[in-house]
Length: 354
Ligand code: MTE
Image 1 (tube, rainbow, N blue to C red):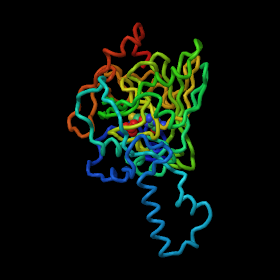
Image 2: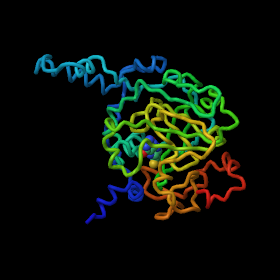
Image 3: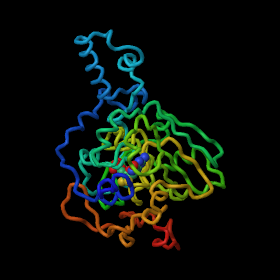
Image 4: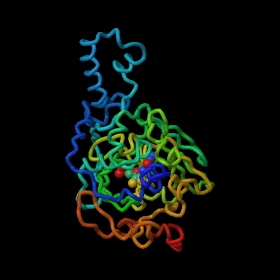
């Protein structure tokens, strides 16, 4: 017989229901583990070495004196001396302009935003991604932009970082589980990338796909949702200036648990639309599949605009808990961005198109 807790572990949709809880303590100290040796964003993306790799090298060198290099052979040895993993996570990003579109609300502490995550590829507990994603290989990295476009193109991270001036956009991020954070994301409007490939008149939607590798993400098999994680937006939503292609936060490149090296931020929609670690963007004619929508269509709609008037079947969406705060606060329509985005949905029944 399946116990309640086993059933929850096996069912990702159910899992979301139990995550509306207080954040973990603010005393975690992992931030240092994400800091980098080199600082400037004009260092080529692929040449930046994260502190974890640097520390592993030192650990290795220490190990050599004790056990002898002869014990370590082949590719493993080469990997340690000259690692293929050169994730940028944690590197300072320079020359970032402040966006006039930022909220003036207090930012959620970095430690909460990096230790209370949803990244089911690395486990379903909020604390899992910060631990299990630390060795995630995010370099080299390519994003293929294809489909109904005149100029399909594969962008490496070097190209993505240079496509437009980076800006810091402080946004509210509201999870469907009724918790929220305020994050200083770094990136630029997604429309910049989309315009580069020249969508054809056939393109009506944009489909996004996350990286997936069961070897690097062994926890994914317990998540209860299919992978790779996929999401979608209508083309006009994707072109809206509030939709950001995000490469960093808090002045630094994205840490792995928050979707390194490149993710989406769509602040007027529930957090699950903000797909992490993107490898493919395809412009398409028909509404594309979206992971939570296909997993539990009666609970998670394709649009998923933040809407305090449309409850989740198993909990209210009227209020939310800001991480670090005790009392719940009212949830705002479109997460407080209604004046900028509600015209995208003129004439639509938002109860039906939840
Ligand atoms: N993207 C991928 N690939 N896998 C995921 O599990 N979770 C989503 C979204 N993007 C998710 C994802 C959900 S439910 C939320 S709330 C946000 O990422 C969380 O982003 P954060 O961990 O940076 O706060």
